[in-house]
Image 1 (cartoon, rainbow, N blue to C red):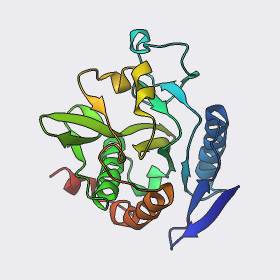
Image 2 (spheres, rainbow, N blue to C red):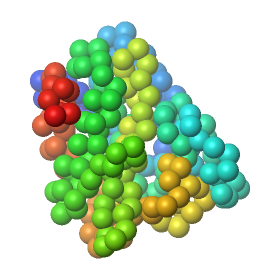
Image 3 (cartoon, rainbow, N blue to C red):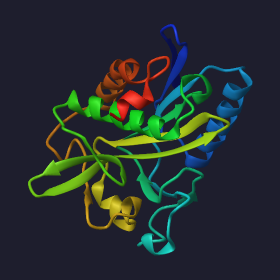
Image 4 (cartoon, rainbow, N blue to C red):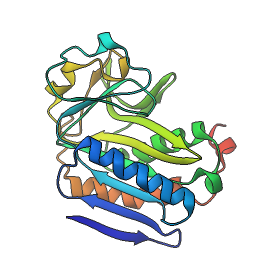
Length: 226
């Protein structure tokens, strides 16, 4: 069963799904919610969930980046980006916000998603970083670096959906069936692989605590880029 609450004066709904949600069902629910937000009949929504093991192909995905076609179901996603894995142990964060009153700037919005993830990881002692030309959040390990959170977004009539996936303790071998986000020269990691034992509930709590500082009522996107 989902748990639902309202957040503060902005009345954003937060939903936490206790069971794994099939990907097609999640897409259908997001599509419906985006339309309702645009129509003014539903509040913005942050949906925290997990999926069964699967691969999604973004709008830039290439066939040769699907290395093991029969390993898990593959779904075409309307979000930007390339191939991504979703599965147990990964916190998927679907973000449905109305940029029409926040800021009609998609690059700024993606920057804020990254900042939100970076601040969340910092609470667990992990230094997440951005990389020029590579969307997502990265961590260093000696001379190597690996992605710990993927970001893929779609915007319809200035309402966002899809969002961010943070690796808490997924089976990292499942990423071997694809070239994650089209980047073959870097690996994938998780909080558990970094020696950090964090529960979904703990990560969810930090996501709630760090949200407002990043997504205030009207973020100054120009200032963020300075």
